[in-house]
Length: 252
Image (cartoon, rainbow, N blue to C red; front, side, top):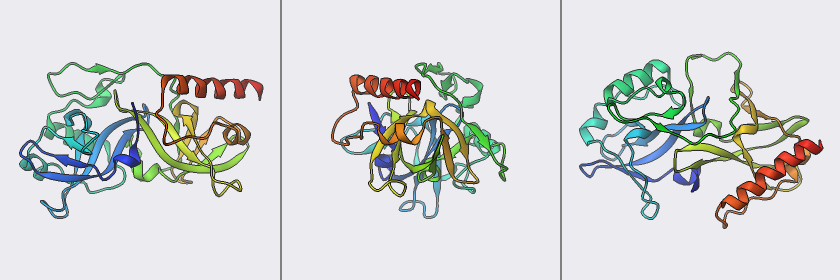
C-alpha cells in the first residue's frame, strides 16, 4: 500500500518499555529513493533530544492507532548519537549511528535496505528507477541521505519551464521505497491541481536552487490525471498512470 510521508509526520513512536515520542521527519537515500531513517522528537521524556532511528529497527506501523513500535528502550534512544546537523546528515554520522545500533550500513548492500546485523538482507522489488544527479556545491558533499522536510516544497522544473512544487512523497509500505512525488501546480497555472509523477522521471535534484528537474514537459504534467485522495492507489490505477506518461512522452 502507498502512504504519503506527510501523513505520517506526527505519528507516535513507542519503545519496548512503553516510552513514546513523535515522528518529525524521514531521511531517504537520494540514490535509491528509499526511506532509511525516521527522526523522532523525544521532547516530553528527553527535552531537546531528537533521535535518528534506522528503519531496520522499526516495526510495521499500526495504521489505526498511528503508532510506530521500535525495538529499542528509552536508554537506547537517550544514549544514541545526537543529531547536530539537520536537515541532512553526514556519512560519518551514519556510520557512528549504525555502529551504535548494530545495524549494517545500507550502502554495503546497494540492492537492499538495511537489516540488523546477523539478519538476511531483504531484496526490494525492481523498479524503473533513474538515479537523479546531485548538482551544486554543498557544505557536506559526502551525504547521500536527504530530509523529506527539506525536499518538500522544492520547485519543479519541467523540460520547458517551471510548473508547481513537490507537495509530498509517497512510499510503498512493503519496502519503504519512494515511488511517487505528489506535485501541486499552483503558483504556475491559474488553478491548483495535484498529480502523481513516478520518481523514475526525476532527472536532477538541485539543492542550491531548491528545485527538481524532471524529464516531462508542462503540458504532460498539466494534463495528467488529478490525484484523488479519497481513492486508494490500486494496481489498475498505477498501470493507467504509467501508460499515460509513457504514451505522452512518445507523442511529444
